[in-house]
Figure 1 (cartoon, helix red, strand yellow):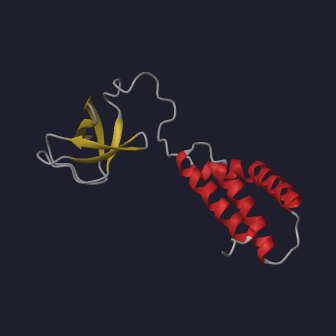
Figure 2 (tube, one colour; figure 1 turned 180 degrees about the vertical axis):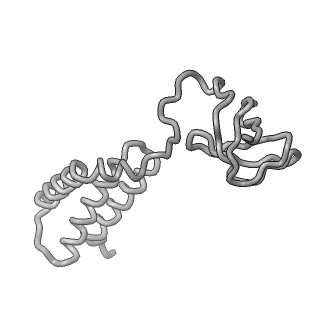
Figure 3 (cartoon, rainbow, N blue to C red; figure 1 turned 120 degrees about the vertical axis):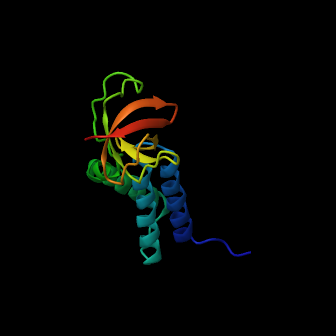
Length: 149
């Protein structure tokens, strides 16, 4: 039986760690995955590195990448919040503004963006996509809205 090469093991380890970023918050694991891929690349290029040196280089490159690029990457991968300081509870949203992301029909409903989040919406009158709307009330996960005149 043929064994798996070290460069492939490092590559697969990096891939698994990067996929772990999907289920964990914080934007940290991606840098350890890149560190593993750097070791994989070095081994693939034929650089003779002992296992201890591989671990040392992996840790140093991962931590350096984390320190240098996390703040930069965090800026681009954070959720969009249109109004960051929301005081009170979600039930205190009467009178707030939103944007219609689709046409809203009285019998069908539609979608609005409210505080950077997609919401289902209902209205008594037809509202066109892109129009500014005012939130009248919230019923579970549906916002009742009206067009802003």
